[in-house]
Length: 122
Image (tube, rainbow, N blue to C red; front, top):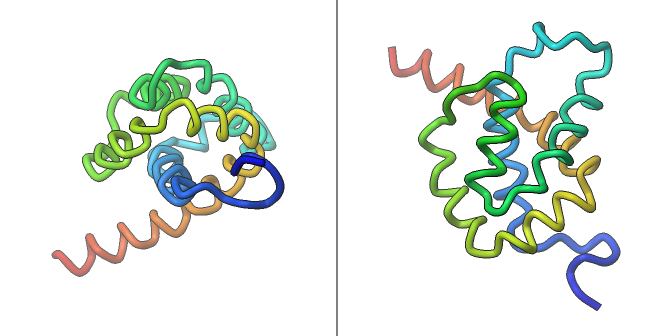
């Protein structure tokens, strides 16, 4: 059986969570008209998995939330994930609730990390 069964995580799992957390970190969640933000995030992730490659997936996911750009640190992740795009997009599609929830929670860690980096730079 392949890596898509059971609880095994594929080698790209960490990159997927980090990339999606980077996108989620930039969303203005106060503008989203819903009481359950994770549901909105998970639904839009699932909708974006119909794309042909990771760059298109990221563009679509960003556009759903009105984002016109992505941070530069995300570009190597997109390129790395695109090497196995079919498996990555299939994994996200079939596990969008797990991936979405983890990345939604991870965004807070990234945000805190970026805040502490910015304050130490000044």
